[in-house]
Image (cartoon, rainbow, N blue to C red):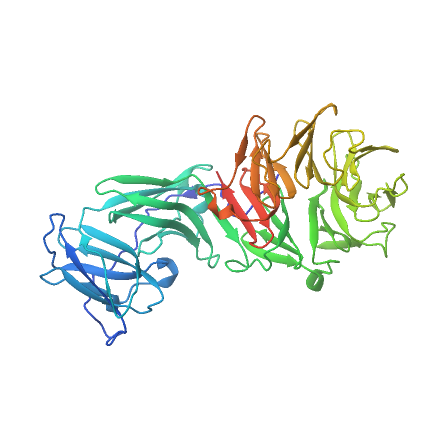
Length: 517
């Protein structure tokens, strides 16, 4: 299976110290002597009495305290005897939050998402209440150096670096003295990976004098051109080595590599990769990495690169769609227009399928089972190569609903899964029973099914143009909706699970996603 970046073996716990909110009384300041707009409001006690000497701070609703820094004194005011305050507005196009603290009692209030209207905006009355505590649970993989957790739209952030955390456990991040309110998001970020954001939890409510537990459900990361060194947002292939090295095959910028918290790129310009469109990535038993590209096959081992194209080999096709190997170490590749080829390393190339009647030309994927039978997905059905014989399964002699088969996966039990334009076909181990899953029998939507992978428990994950679904053997799980809203409306082109069953997804226009359940 496959693995990625934030894996840790052992970390040592350190005391998590909250970065304090400055107790500086404001009241104007020199930054906004004549503001174009102001917010006015009133603070009252829990009994409705005007509250004086309350420190009131204006904070941008999308404020990230790790990167945006401290709030200037000019955006802090102290209420008068009538509980009134006035705050200048730096940018009338932004939305703002107000956080207030009674300096004597420690009671607080929070007003969020204030929309600026005109020269003077009236904030709702702020009622001071006792604060609460939020305990956020995170996987230990986020306890790496440079990590922070922050509450969006506030000044609250904490370091996640820790000591003595057992592997495969969770770490606790405690935010104390938060005002009673419904907050939007707690994010994880890492200063060593600029602009990286991981959603820890969304829409949680702080309850006075109580502790709210959040997190430890769905933690996700997005890597795209906007927030990481990822140079292309069309990720059509994912491959994760056993040692944790992560490969991204892109449509236009070659292969991106993440290893030991460093990015590297293999492109036409810097490595001689034959094409910057990488369709498949595969690792053979010797550790050699193979790239199936639009212009042949490239292999990589210890920085030694070898290319195979129709100009320098007997593989008479350039567009390579799939790649695998058998128990003898022979490499099998599927191609558009010219069938399947077998490469005996340093010996010869042999073509299969093109001389079949009718010819098997357009092959979209290939894989090999434990008995060295080669299974290929083609536009003429499923093709099985064994020794010198070729067997074709199509609509005329099987229960395939369509002869257009896009990919093939063999699960741990030996079942064969075939992706089609509008669903998935499952062929039993004994090759006697075909089962069709589509929108009528499962959460698989009508989008094209693009890829499949499997976790250690044997659950099957299917990526399609309309999302991600999982088949446990008895039920289907649809990864969409509010809990997995970051996947909504995503065309998922590839799926891979690492050695800890973290799920990785490549999308057509949003880069790559990682999330763990």
